[in-house]
Structures are given as structure tokens and as C-alpha cells.
Length: 348
Image 1 (cartoon, rainbow, N blue to C red):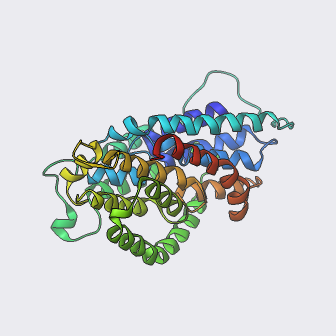
Image 2 (tube, rainbow, N blue to C red; image 1 turned 90 degrees about the vertical axis):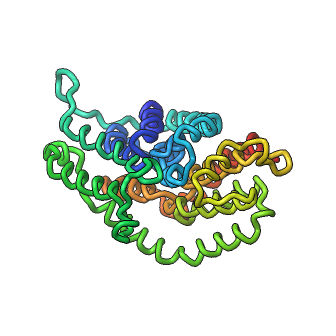
């Protein structure tokens, strides 16, 4: 189980937290059949669906938006790796201890004899196209055409490619593999309806955050940035929360989030960008970590969370409800670790 979580936290930085979650959740549920406890589901969400994907812009939506704004691709891993290791080290150790205490044995799976084979290899090609298309953006490639500027549409060539590839991948998928993995669209339908509601109702909250960040930029200490970004990322969508606090923190240094040059300056924290004893790059580090890590605090913090809950529930696994998830797991497990991360890295 620990090896699966470690594998998931690593690949989530290459195929995204959603991709890693969807790839691993069904095998993970299957090998634990007969001994599955609620904490198995929760720690999977903590590690694979959220915190694991904090090292690259591909891993989690807030970091991807930062990349599009001008944060260098490898800046994230250079700044976030140590807090990432500390957090996941504690989580995996605790998970291992809890898993050892489970007395039930897993249901023995009758397997076929012979070597290991991969069904549906063609899907790797589709996945590669999607990963490459991530970089097809005018903010990344100079001179790349922008459909928004040309035709006023709210999407770009990247989104068209991803949509077309998604449809092609599903149509070309090995049907036996889909059946074996019990693939269906019900979990993503539920998440879609849920997030439509969240996006419709969170606009006033985001406007309030934007107003506060703009008017109180001078008062935004590193501690405030870390905790406010984190707490709001747990209950709102973490991507717009990241952007609003990035804009506010940059305003503290008289920089503009709309300028790629300013964003790069902010990320590298030059000697001229110091407030007290804190350089600007530490603010970006706090925003990046808080928006991704705290996304694990509730089912609403990140889209894969709710999908994992629904997929597990479809297998009749015992899954904590929204309130239980927070008071039984997030608060007693994550909050002490997040306090430690603040103390070690952002206590200025």
C-alpha cells in the first residue's frame, strides 16, 4: 500500500493528481478488498490526489496557472521539494502504522499464471499528446496563436486538442480494460454538477478575497499569506485562490501579476524584493504550498477528492462523509503537519 502511494505521489507530477488518482484508485481498492478501512481512502486522497502533485505545474491546477503567468517550470520543485518530503514522510509513516493495525486479511485474488502484460498500450500515446499540449499556450510559446484574442472564445488550441484526444482515447480504448476497471462516467458527472454549484456561488467570496488582497497588500505577512491561502483553498477551488493571493502578494512588492517579467522577478526573489527579512520568492513558495497542500482538507478542495469518494462508494467501501472527513482526519492529521511546515519554513 505504501509503495502504491509513493508511486502515485511521484507520477501525479507527470500526469496530474486527477490522472494519478484515476489510474491507481481501482487497483488500490481491489488489492485491499476485505480489509479496506476509511483511512485507506482518506490517505489516498491526501497523498495521491493532492500533496503528491506539488512539484510541477502539471501536478496541480494552481501551479499550472502560476506557470502560465510566468513562474518558471522548474522553480516549483526547487522550492517545494523539502516541505513536500517532510509532509509526505509524516503522512506515509502514519499510514504505515495504521495499516499494520488492520487485522483483516485481504480477499485472495485469483490471478492468471504467466507474465505481466499491459492492455491498451495505445492509451499511452494519447496521454503523451495531452501532456505535450499542456505547453501549447501563448504565455509559454512566443507567437503561438491565441483563440481568445482572435475570436473572443474562452478557450485555446490546447483545450481543443485535449478535448479531441479525450474523445479519441475513449473511443479507441480496450473495452475489456474498461470493463475490468469498472469504468463509468458517474463519478465525474457528480463532480461536474458539484463544481458548477461551487463556481456559481464562490464568485462573491473570490471577489472579497481579491478586494482584500488588493487593499491590504502591505499588511499581508508571510504567515497571513500561508494560512489564508490554505484555509480558503480547502473550501473554495484552490486555483483562483492561488491567483488572487499571488496578485496581492505581488502588489506588496509593487509588481503586476499581468506582467510575465514581474512574475519571474517575484519568483526569483532578487535582493531588491525584500520586505523585512523575507524575499518575494518565499511568498510565492507559501502560496504554492498552501494552495496545493490544503486542497486535501475537504472533499471540495480539489476535484479528484470527490471523484475518489464516489468511486470508492460505488464499490460499497466505507467512506467518511464530509463532516467525518474533516474532524476525524483532516484536522487531527493534516493541521499539525501544516503547523510544522509553517514553523519550519514560514515562521518569519
